[in-house]
Length: 305
Picture 1: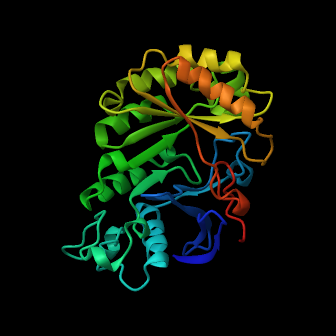
Picture 2: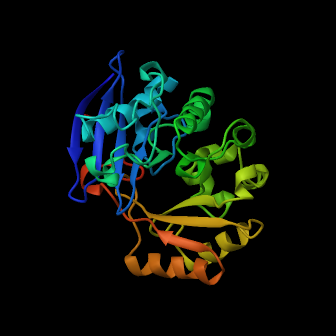
């Protein structure tokens, strides 16, 4: 596998087109924050979930990635930032590339050698594909990252919500869970996330209640705000009631990127956020990173960049 192309956003986000031995491609993203460097990895070539706001859905589904292909994305991206010293810094993520004694660690052995923001500190399984439909490879990758020293609180697996796999994930590994909810009721979610017709909101949230790490840390709820569809104040109030059974919740509001739909105004988004805060929820409007290079939420499509 190799980096076939790379493009950098004005905000520092870097998007990579990763080509595998069979010429299939995925996109992976590095997102720079003040103190962290977050790697967003893909788990499938394409996706079968057919979410209406997502560019990946337009590709259809091709195949699952192997665990080595998932971890290899991290190795390639880290190597693109630190091409001179990946082994010294312990960034051999792929088991097939690991040597005895190699570890993934947040800090380099020689702190003066590199700025910490140049090392991957967080990994999110939020790229192309539905992670829980490539379950074995994703769990292997999560466990491998943990063996290499990455804390479970820095690994997040995102899913549209497959109840039995959510419960199994809680038994088989340690990681953070993010639910791509995007709607406060089944009527709206059926239109945005068609798999909801098979796994309605109640079933998904019941599975989240059984996820052990939601009892020790927050359940992350992803909610894409789409103008005139799910952005009304009554939707915010309905969402607040829906999530009431959970003790620890972080709600990430995402302004819809212009793939099919349009985002609401900043004023509408802020009012939605404030309604949730007033209801007692930690709520943030996620900073839009990489929009100018089609690297933001719902924009990955493995096209030539």
